[in-house]
Length: 260
Image 1 (tube, one colour):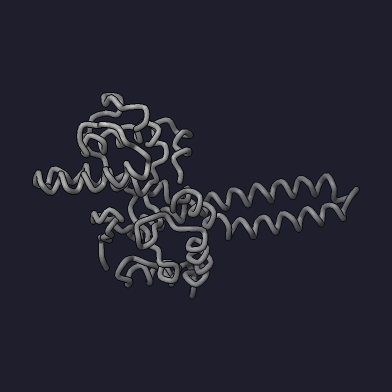
Image 2 (tube, helix red, strand yellow; image 1 turned 135 degrees about the vertical axis):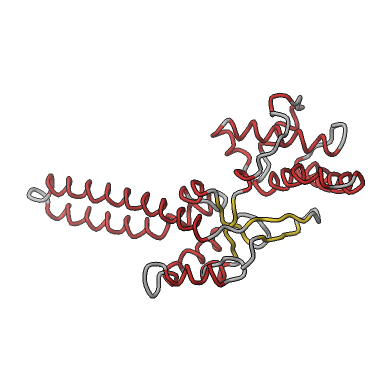
C-alpha cells in the first residue's frame, strides 16, 4: 500500500499527493451520513406534519406527498455524493471536514461520470456487511482504492489546500497588478496546487532547476490566463498568483468565480 501518488502535470512538472487513509475516509463518511440522516429526518417530520393536516381532509394528496418524499429521500441517498464531488472539486462536506478530496489519475477533480461510477458502486463496498468490502479493498489495494475508485479511475488524497501551510509573505504584503488579481479568480484548484507545490519545494532546488521549473509553470499559466505584463521574474509571477488566490480564498463566495 503506497502513501504517495505521483503525477506529471501538463507543464512536465512532477508533483506528489499523499493518499488518504482509512481513518480520514471513515470520518468523512460518518459526517456525510449524519448530514444525509438529518435531511431525511427533516423530510420525515415534514411528512408527518402534512399527515396531520391532510390525512383526514385530503388523504389522496397526502399519499402523493408521501410518495414524493420517498422519491426525494431515495435520490438524496444516491445523488448526495455524486453531485457534491462533481460540483465541489472532489469534496463532500464530510471530505472537507476530514481534509481529503477525490481526484482522477491526472490529479484533477473527477467529472460527473467518474463520480457517478465510484458512488453507484458504493453498494458493492457494503457487502457482505457494514462497508466491509470497501475497507478491505482500501487496505489491500496499492493506492488505497475501494472498488468504486478502481472502476472509476479515482483516488482519495489529503487536501493540499489544507496541507500546504508554509511561510510565504501574507497576501496583503504583495503588490499585485490588476490583471494578475483577475487571473487569480480564474485559477482552477489544480493550477493553484501546482503553484503551491513549486513554492513549497523551491528551496530544495538549485538555482538552475528553480529557474527552469518556474519558467515552465509561469509561461504555461500566463498563456492560459492571458497575462502578458512585466512581472519581474517567473517566480515573482507565481508568488503574485499565489497571493492573489489566497485573497480570493479568504473572501469566501468570491472564490466561486475562479472555476473553469
